Length: 456
Image: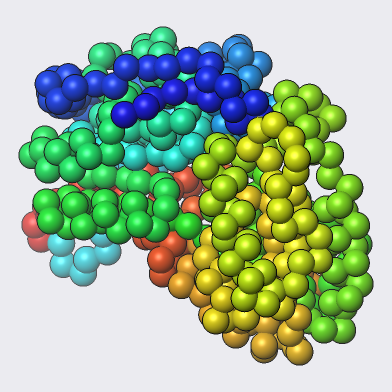
């Protein structure tokens, strides 16, 4: 197994890490379980102190951690800096809110006193992706640590510098050994970990096939699971939308993280009355993106995470072109070093084409022209995914009515899908199940115990 940091802007190896063997993994599970026995008894104040220190440490070395993200997976440096600050805010959100979110909840019972009491479950396993290498881990680990659980994390193999740094951060903030553990392991070790009786749940953010495999493991072993998988988010443009602002947000929504986000806008569904003007503006702004070194503040389009990711995206795009899709701009890779892909717009994509219901993870947008609002909703729902979506209209109440008919876990009016510590994040259909962030995120891996005190 190769665990290496390879700069996708140059395809040069920066650093390699040794994977753990089976015995080391067994020891890590034992350590996490031992830590749980005492960590579960700590007060919210003790946990809060550690997590607030975690936020402070993130901010004090923000530039170093941002640079690490960019070197590991190619994100533009400004986006990496934003990610670090966002992680600090998530840590503060749960540090300051966990006691309130997990407070005993009185039950309304006519003839008795009863309440719900929240308790941690134990050791949890997290399988994390590379596209937001700090954020994805923090949004899983932080609420669960505040709830009194301990966590093991298998991070993506192409962001090992970030994985090691996160473990060091959790240690430096004062968490006892075993509360947070990074595992440099091959994927086949995940089955052994999930099957272990001491591990009580598993959370995965990643691809649909990986999610199906982990869900099967969790079900087989009667463990709780949370899955955040792919997305094919619709971006609906109605005829009364502010087109200038909508085009600007369409570029932002599609090109965040070079298009490598589960909730990036991917399917642009535009009512025919404004389709020509939207496509003209969209094409102009995407064509103006400046490809370059992600460490350069002037760069507006960074490389993909790996060379293999760029190759796969090219294959997906070419399959649609071969099947009759129209290339408005792009459609191929530039002649330069690194895992880059040209900004691309495809039209005339039909349901019989492979990419109609696939997630395109990169700077590729598909634009569909529809007759009216009803047809836009129908097309938006013609997907096996259901993560996020957005609706653009001058009438917020109209947007609300449309949003309520879209089959996704999240819908935003007049802005692309985004995440925020206070808002629940998650999807339906093949995009997974469960919720992260907000007060709901801390409730996924706790025992909601009923305590009945008898008759009043």
